[in-house]
Length: 387
Image (cartoon, rainbow, N blue to C red; front, side, top):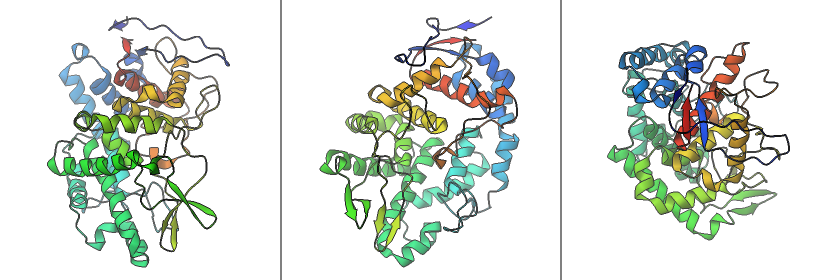
């Protein structure tokens, strides 16, 4: 027996070449997720998707405890050192022999614990909070550069860029884990927002590149948004309200197509290939709205939804419409030919996808996308029906 809230959902019937219209209603399959998803998605379904009148406190408490003790959560906690760090690096998204990175770094691991549903204030968070708050302090200790120490020693001009990149990521992580009202986080967030806002208002927003030999290089004066600064803004509703003009400009900027040509960041004699910068909509899709990287598309769409900016993003909206059209009458994502879990090609989504342990079942392949679509629908204030 379904539970109803608002208007009923009308399933989209879309032929392969038809125009995709973004719906304004969605079915959230509470029963299906409770029966088929793992501990983290079950907990987050209760905490973030279930109407209060249908939620029992002891049910939520038990689900929270199960998520905190799940194999996925414990696997992350097990690798944390007593110093609060993972892997002797901060930003590594994957092992890299070239960069001396043996495993995923501290900030992605910390953010993953938040995505897995570990309660705020838990010991693993407290250990890393000390590290992250120190990174906001503008302490010039070379040890705080972590994996960038060798780069800055060889190219001192890279120091300000490395420290600012680290501060952005640390501010983002702290904002996502309930520290958004801390004066230290607010101060760092406003400084970052001011720098991005100045970039968006400048001619560099339209022409951010210069020639560096045979490569396109980012102008040294450019301060474009990044995955970290955008996630920071998305996690801080108060910042969005206080700087509404900036938030709107940022949303419009992120809706434009990203540059097709690759670019580098030049640091003296060194050249870096940045994967964290956002110079427009990063979603690659075909004419039917099928995203090439579904995890990246979902992450980006969720960020835009939290910022109230999706209405300006045609590619992201079309991809969301396609994904929503693939949900069945319960709200379960059932695309044709789903033989494996959607794979990410960009490692920026490591912390949030997948939350579900993949097995050979359809349910394990579908649970993450089903949950994310339901969450996005709620963030967009669509009319919801619960099944």
